[in-house]
Length: 84
Image 1 (cartoon, helix red, strand yellow):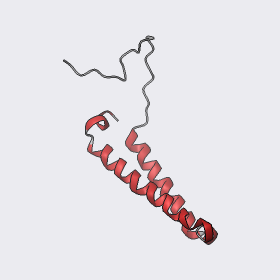
Image 2: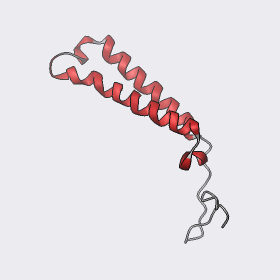
Image 3: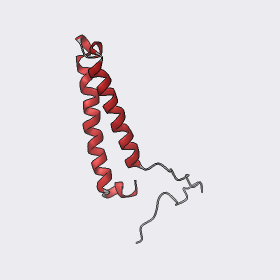
Image 4: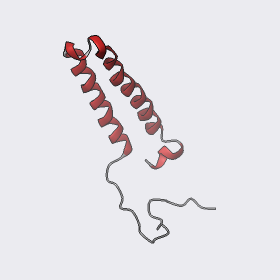
């Protein structure tokens, strides 16, 4: 059995989806930068991390950690990530 490229195989309706010019690795990089900017803003503006908002710092930290794990997975190119 050969490997079928799902991106160019027609669906049941005969419609072939357009190829996306943006690589998933690039999207992961943009996401990491966005989380880093969010963390920087929260750390620079004291009112965003005081009182009931003290947990806000951990949201971009979690985004950075999970995004970094996803980036490493995509860069390794194993499994489904090989086509990304």
